[in-house]
Structure formats: C-alpha cells, structure tokens
Image 1 (spheres, rainbow, N blue to C red):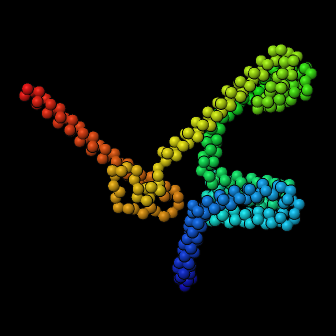
Image 2 (cartoon, helix red, strand yellow):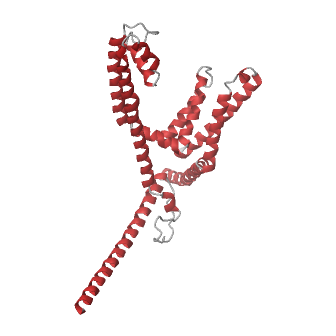
Image 3 (cartoon, helix red, strand yellow):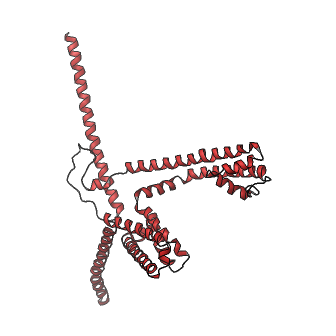
Length: 334
C-alpha cells in the first residue's frame, strides 16, 4: 500500500511538470512558425537567396580567384548565407516536425541545404552550390505554380514525348539509309546514333547548311529535312506548349475556386448583402484544423446566401402573380 501511494504521489508530481514542458515546447513551436512564416521574413529569405546567387556568379571572375583575400571574403560570405538558410530550415523543422518531410517543397529545401553542407569540402562538387538558387521556386508563387503545372501534365506530356521519340527513330533510320553514303563535311548520318544527334541539332532550326550539302548530291534531299522540321518544330512542340498552357490555366482556375480562408477568419464576406454574425475565434492547432474550420464557415455563409436568394425569388414570383391578376382584372373591366 505504501509503495502504491508513493507511486501515485510520484505520478501526480511528475504530471504537472510534464504538461508544463509540453506546453512550453508547443509555445516554442508556434513562435518559430510565426517568425519563419512571417511575410517580411519570407521576403528577406528571397532577397538573401538572390544575393547569394549573384555573388556565386561574381565569384567566377578572375579578380576573385587571383586575390586570396577577396576569395576568402566570398567564401566567408557564402558560409554566412548557408548558416542563415540552415537556421531558417531548423525553425521550419521545429514548427512542422515530421510533417516537413511530407511537404514536397519543404523537403526540397531540406535536401538543398543538407547537400550544401555535405559537399562543401569537395572542390569539384562545390560548383553545384548554385543549385541553392533553386530554392526561389519554393518561395515565388508564380514559379511554384508553373512547376506544379508541369508535374500535373506529366501523363499527357509522356504521350507526346513517346510520339516525338517515334518520329525521331523513323527519321533516323530513314536518313541513315538515304544519306549515310554521301560525302559530307562531317559524319552526320554514318550511324544511327550520329543521325539521332544530327536530327536533334536540326530540331533546333540549325539545318539549312546541312540540307544544302545533301542537295548538292541529291536534289530531292530537302524533302526529308522539311517534313521533319514541320512535324517536330511546328506540330509537336506547339502541342507541348498547348498542354503546358492548359495546365497553367487549370491551375489558376483551381486557385480562384479555392475558399478564401483568410477572409473568413477576418470576418469578411464575399457577398455584400450578407452581414457577418458574431465573430467566432478559429480553433488553435494545426493548419488542417484551421482550413476545415474556414471551410465550415464558408459553407454556413453560402447556405445563408442561398436562403436569402430563395426568399428573393419567392417574392419576385408573388409580384409576378399579382401583376398577372391585376392585368386580368383590368381586361375583364374593359
């Protein structure tokens, strides 16, 4: 009995301390999230990424490599930028926890920063530090939407890519058989792999000189060149551009249809005639709970707006019926 009572007392003494520690950790998490996700902090990080990328470009000039002091200053500045990015990522990790690895954009930031530290001692690999500028994609909404659109169109883009590969293979075999024996200024069509490389160069619109070389020996040699350029340059690539534009348009339309959660929290309504009721405080917790709460509030607002619209329609119907009865009465009196 004495042992059980001592255990109970120990649990009662430890429980408040544990709850206090949990509350302190949660407060620290919220503070980190509030700081690192503040609009001004995010803008500052964008500016630092841009400045860091510019300095990496300037560091490639000879006046930096020839002067050890200038080169060391650039290295120290780059290290300061990397420390700042690491602190920012650590605060994101404290705020999101394991959910950081479930978010593709935050995980991309994590990989970039970790690789920057891991490869900092390798002179050859250090040239890839410029990929740190790719973090702008996760910060600029326009770039993020474009990358999201590209990932959304991958299934359709795969079909177009397969069609393009088939066209390349057909013309590669055709041109190798037709022009492989010609004496040209280079080995353009001697083997299938050489022909594929030549066709890739032709797809970039650098084909006129080569076509004239072939036409000097075969007068109808222009026909395969012109048809290949028309199919790949004007049809297939325009189809790819159309698919990308369609995906971007669909993404923007999806953004327009997304509920304005911030407007709901602030008490604003998209309908001018709907008066907001008593302000309700959104629940504190994860972002998912806040979004669910915002959607519920938006559903309530739309339901009230629908009721008001139905009442207005009923009133209009009554007015129309009244006017019809009045017109019939006037006609009977006349």
